Amino acid sequence: MPQMRPLDPAFPIDRQIALDAGPVVLVNLFTLDAADEPRFLKNWQDDAAFMKRQPGFISTQLHRAVGDNPTYLNYAVWESNAHFRAAFTHPEFRAKIADYPASAVASPHLFQKVAVPGICVA
Image (cartoon, rainbow, N blue to C red; front, top):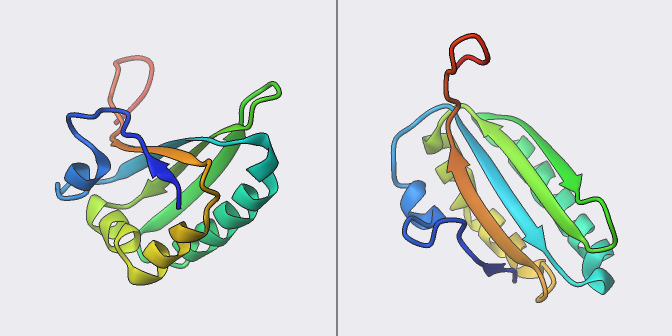
């Protein structure tokens, strides 16, 4: 099972999922040992396939850091926090995360778009 290291220790993912918001973007940073990279990728693919079937799921993307260290950034867009919460707390998903390599450290955090005039919309 991956270790959880919150991006914001004062407001970890278990507190974030309790809020009503939408749409939301999950950003998850993963670090792991190089030897565990193939297993991590297989586990992530299985999790992404599960999430893709869940109500409210919009999209996801996985990125690998440039360089030798296997650091990954995943983001997933959800219609609402309620949809994400249902998928994240689903017993099938919770069972799947136990399959991740022990070296994996996950740092999930939820975000919402921000409007910046002339640059981007909320």
